[in-house]
Image (tube, rainbow, N blue to C red; front, side):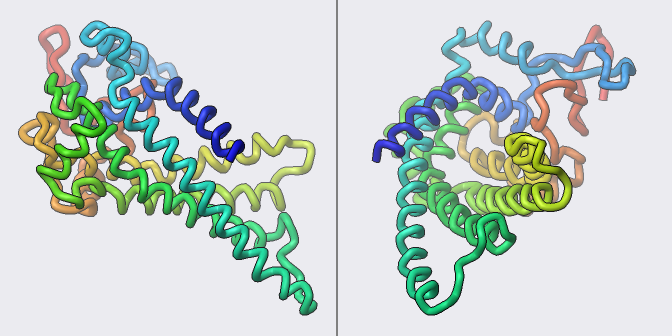
Length: 299
């Protein structure tokens, strides 16, 4: 219990610190670009027109809502993090107890459990983690949906989702139970794929690519970065579906309505926008959008 409380406190602190970044990322993901592009240079030194990055976007929000505006949707996100930590730890504990009950008679019968560091051990541990994460994701997804909708109502200056309990009643009244799980499937798929890619890649790096002199943190960070890049489209599609047709101004005529998450995926892929919001720096112009800058039009 003490470990869970410590994890909740640490997670809450990190959530507060990272919330402005997530807030800006979500607004970019849904296509809200209130600032015109400016002339800058890319990583190779070429002059290109780029959309404003993290700091310019944050300054724009502060000018409208003040510094507190950067923390819209923080409360339901904290609720999701705290509940998710508890569910995750409980499921892992149940899995640990059951695995011990199974392993003990196997060892007594002459069979050995998987050696730590072996591929079988990685598969076993990843499976347990996948089940725990999936349970936590399903339980906390309603708070995730509310968090995203609290954020995107900044676009239309709306106050429809103003509190956790009011937001719960609003979602249930307008969309029923299914409204709390909008975007759940691509989120689950992305989480599961990211976990397996990260753990298996880290195992391959540890086993074949890098010697023991390289720190474990660097190995895991490299695998995590690669996995997050590959599965980012699932995050984007999930977030878009969570605010899809939710009767806010972010919906038509401002954004498209998608019957299913597969339709959303196909539309973004067709427009070349599957990486929209992935980077908060060196942001290229989204496909299919026009901006007015110094009385000129840029695509």
